[in-house]
Image 1: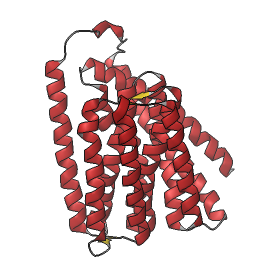
Image 2: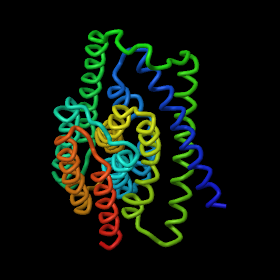
Image 3: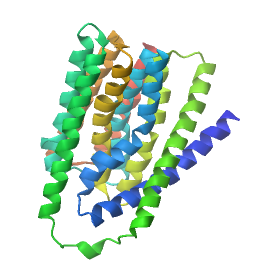
Length: 311
């Protein structure tokens, strides 16, 4: 029965992501807001809801290892597997502005998170509030960027994209989010139950099964976006989700209940930083991630999985 739930969850994720991308893309065109900004805000927050739910519930339940490892593991998965898989379908074009601003910002907050966690080896309530304040600043930055982009928007290429009615956009987005949340939750629960059958630890489950499971919305949404030639939305979803996971998800979780910070968490955040720099270098040279680079990223993630399963 658990395997049936697993398959059903995947179906909901795929169809939900398809609707979500369709509605979000049309809203972006209708409001004359760049797809990149929509990807970093609405799409990123929507696809990160499973991580938010899992980490907050884990924090309340006292499963500290699961709370942090889920968020950090999801970020590593987003960066290496989601971007890598997108590049396999189409070379993933990356906006130069993103490489200069949002991408470095996502790397900077990982360092801030690491410093806060290593101070007393605890992510306390004050640390959580600090992360939430930075998140509020990030949202203000995104809203300001959207306003500037809208002011500079011209009517060029306006008719090249079919804009669906607003009621249908809302239906697609809301319906897509609901399907993504239910599908992600179903997949995670089924996968976790299977993992527990093999007596895996909370930290290992968080970094592997749960992290990959809660990142399935990002994976499916970004791959669908890449196939629809919405590269900005696909890449924006990854960067926005990673920022959301650190600042909002762990910010809320630690503000509710202090979370212990283990040396394993330190190593995983360092791995995240190293991989971030690598992806940034891949993207900088040609302003896109080629298929060959996507394959390298997927292989590196696979090696990382072997490493954490052995440690």
